[in-house]
Image (cartoon, rainbow, N blue to C red; front, side):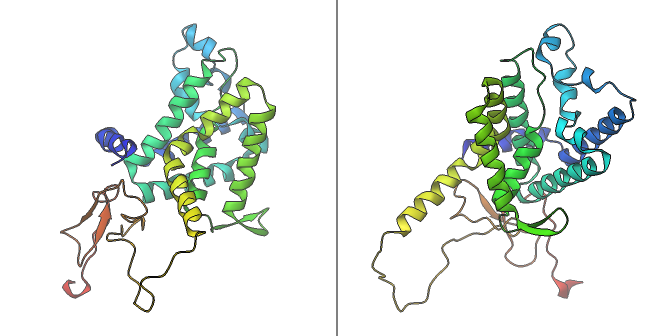
Length: 272
């Protein structure tokens, strides 16, 4: 069991269900308030120098301040951006479970907070939420198509590749403040997925070496023993997870530890 999985289980009693929904609602309210001049959003943003001067609430309220790029889009396109963040976050919660999503967002929050105080006179953005959620969703669902400009269908993995290229360009060409911001925005993704990426690369490299097929002519068998009914992860693809069978579900319904407690029970149609 990985340390991330153990930590997710440890914080499970304190997690917030539908966390992304609350963040998006908060950002939507502040976005509208800022556009119509009803709120001074700058008083809620993360400015470490102001926090050190006594404005402690900024370490909490900044997560509800919409990223500057959304404010520049106008209300309609900003609402669309927030809706996409909500979709990505909701999908990840269904795949991972509430505890793992809370941990993912929490690590991003702490990374952003930590690097912000290294440049205390600069306002820090919570752009980590939208970038990291998008990259995680794209990694787990690479073949989903999005309509760019509502017309052109593009697989999300290519949009993620462009996002990674932009982040790399900022890291190389930007100053140290920009580099720290990039690390904060992708740090939780790397913590969560670097092991899986390494295993995939290692498996790809191994597959390039021809091996004798000792089982040629025999029927192939599954490469895993257990598969989660919800997220489809297996004990082969994610050996750090625990897999259990639910006694309240009809048939042999297997679930990973992220979905064992919060899944919808399978009902036998004959019993209805």
